[in-house]
Image (cartoon, rainbow, N blue to C red; front, side, top):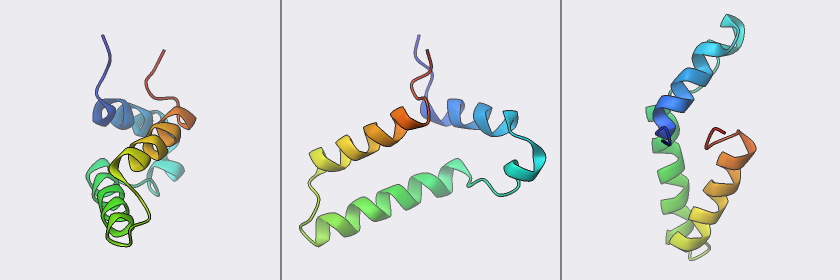
Length: 68
């Protein structure tokens, strides 16, 4: 069964040392930022939803999501 990203992200944050956890961005803020970037790129005509999905998929793979 695959975990939702929010749960995985929260677990990741809890596993970080306190000094790193303090500087980590909260999931809700991260989600808003991602949506804002995608929206701005779409408005500029530089990013289709398909391309944004590909970018996000690559970023998530870099951070180890989905978990093994």
